Amino acid sequence: MAERATFRVKRGLAEMLKGGVIMDVTTAEQARISEEAGAVAVMALERVPADIRAAGGVARMASPRVIKEIQEAVTIPVMAKARIGHFAEAQVLQSLKVDYVDESEVLTPADEANHIDKHAFEVPFVCGAINLGEALRRIGEGAAMIRSKGEAGTGNIVEAVRHLRGIVGGIKQLGALGREQLSAQAKELGAPLEIVEEVAEGGWLPVPLFCAGGIATPADAALVMQLGAEGNFVGSGIFKSEDPERRARAIVEATTHFNDPERVAAASIELGEPMRGDDIGQLAAEGELLQQRGV
Amino acid sequence: MADRHGLSPQRGEAERLRIGVLASQGDFGAHAEMLRSLGAEPIEVRTAEELSGLDGLIIPGGESTTITKAIERDGLEPAIRAHADSGLPILGTCAGMIVCDREHLGLVDAAARRNAFGRQIASFEVELKVGGIGPDPMRAVFIRAPWIDEHGAEVEVLASVDDRPVVVRQGQIVLCAFHPELTDDSRLHALLMAMATAARNRAAEVRGISSRG
Image (cartoon, rainbow over all chains, first blue to last red; front, side, top):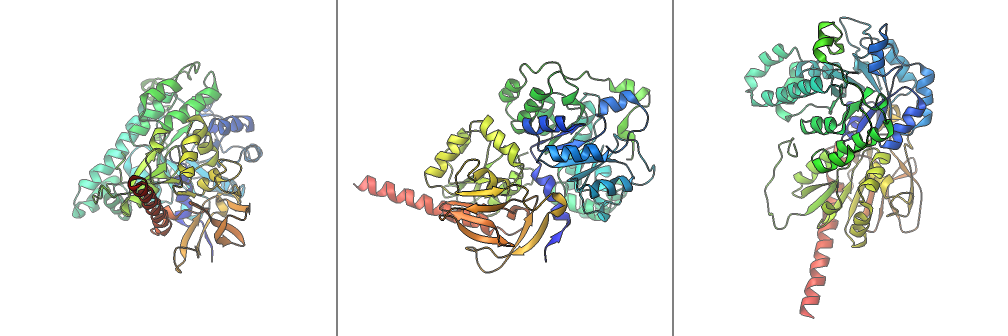
């Protein structure tokens, strides 16, 4: 009689994470710090994006041992990243009972043409997107949560802002179209028509939209929340900063009180140095942008 | 952004119930939308000031550790307690059930067990009969849900799953382990609003008596 893994149940957990911060962690100790700071969930991975960038080579799913240690260390949900198209990594993560799988461009893609068929899984998925078309394609494949991609590991918010504005603006544009225009628009977006219709009618994605890729300060968190993000993923921004504990707490506070500049200001005092940022133009020139993977 | 979903019903401003929805973290937006659809005025609550002048309060689903820390950080506990002490109703769903239990705000004489049904992969939905809202079952969506392990005599159990209490009531406080706001079934919200109306009428009666006296 009880039904598990319905789309509503999968989406449901993402709904519960709204207004919160999901933090990248590589160890049980970092997971504990995140939970103590008020994170709504942690994302287990081998290295934070800034280190993936620095190390080069192939970035894969975190080791099951580390994921288990993190699961034992905290009571909040534990997410983990799988490579784009690597459904066997996702199967492993599901067997470990992680709460969400992030099919992530931050890891080295395993399949250049296809994403994972996320409908085939009981564990829910979150996927990145740089624009509305990409978001709707991922939802069509079964993603129950979307995050704007930004540019992970840079500490530079500019790409996250561009992607978020693109997605939110795209939703508004859809709402202004007549029904007869939606088919052509779906073709242009490269997205399933029924999901395009759902967004045009509902005025929002059928799943929660979070922001990722570049948040390094409380003001960054407040900015993207005001632009329409429903919650935040913070990767390198916390554990690559001088005082991760305080910075984590401050970003949590700013994500709740995003409309209150005095609170964001107060939260921003004495946090130590943020992570060092990267210039996007230089990364682009070097062909180092992660956001181009698996669109 | 507050009106991202484009709902703006206009009716009987003077009589509309003002129901707060704790918005520190969680799915407060879905609760606000449901309240609006029932004709109440939802108020997003992030500060102690926003807790004054309410007819009722919803503590939504979310991460109970995050919400508990936010209540402490933002000094909301005295105002929530004052709300409860003045006989105003509260509906706590999922994390809200945990936040109100003995170990946390202590508003209900019950012990909630966090993540009692297991991790996300064990989350489920089921038809569930709930006492006090009519004979038809609700579609109950449980997300990493708690249950009530143990409770005092004052606590009435309105629904159970496998003999575990998942909807309970003590006085003006209703706690629910699942998520009515993720469905179209607004009966628990309507119950909260009925309790809020009754509290408003009681207060008006008291004022009437004292002004006549």
